Length: 534
Image 1 (cartoon, rainbow, N blue to C red):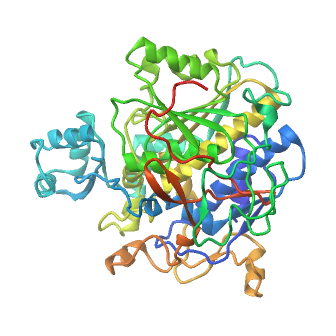
Image 2 (image 1 turned 120 degrees about the vertical axis):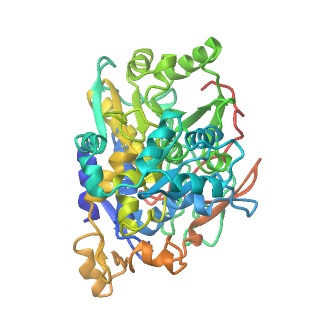
């Protein structure tokens, strides 16, 4: 089934993806009925195949695209495996979490200080209030009442809803009426882009033989530094040795933060794109996530409140092939960086928008995060059997949306090459939740196939046993004190890299093209380490 899902994703962005080989040995068993491993495998496979398709358009040659389901799932857990000098950075605020209300549950997202303060104001509490006081305040009010009050204070909250309640909600209706990945051509942008058309150095595609910024093997099945170089960025790939530089020369402007948008930029960097992340010194960040999603990127900071900052960003836009926007819809428009303005400044650009609720409907401009969308869409309700919220065993909506954004970006480049024009791509956490729901559920106690005839091969002892054992509900497993992540340890898929921030442990990027793996050529930079220039 996963191959059909990959093909469907390709059709959704208007490209015919090449075949993808799916490897599914030593399958993890996440504690959820949702088909999260299938989702991870499909989005990684589709994005990798799209990169291979673009590389073939640019340089010709044969294509062999492969995705390992185990590696794809590990990538969705990367912030859990990420360490700095052996320590996992804190990424959750003290007040973030689920609270019982008078009529159900509400989730408060308080990782940023201003969101914490907004929640406290909405609850009538002072700035020094702790978790016990928040619990008491929530217990006397309704979940939707609290949600509305926090949103009115410019904060982030979500009342737990069932699937049926979400389906009847106006925003649920809006999400159901939109595609998983919206792709449409903008006015202008010129004709088809011919060979060497991406970026200023497109002719170098596939020629980089860098060694990955100091990567070392850490107990993995594959060694990225193994094999013999041939001078063309290729090495012996029988044990996974080799690198992929298919997006060499493609410039990506990363105007995102938190997880989904930054993951998209990191994926493109892994395939060789030049990714420049633009932040702002006055905006809060979750430092651990900035590091975890910063591999392979450069980093600059601009203040768009000043004309100097806006002018610098306009210059960057003019030199970009892809612009990924991950702020709340309308936030960048106020400074003159809407889709139309970006397309006018850079004809032929692919502009990718990543949002929480899709940009349409009554919540189109609402702030949101993965855990909040799980609450409103019925995922957390189903996970806990309607009794209490139980989330997915990873930030699945964030990671899947990031990979879908990368897929859309590369598909936009392919279509620009074939058809010309500028392209607008839209993805959202809510659309990803809707798609995950449509993938169906695993059947408790049964092995569930990821793909067609390979299941029969597995039963006959084949080497690519594509199956998952869901092993019970997430709620039951959490109640026993178990881990929701997986029954199979994925630590052998981590690697280490030295950086100015310390020695980093991280999950390598999954996917393989012509037996070559993607890699990140540099460790995460410091915030604002680089000048705002290409």
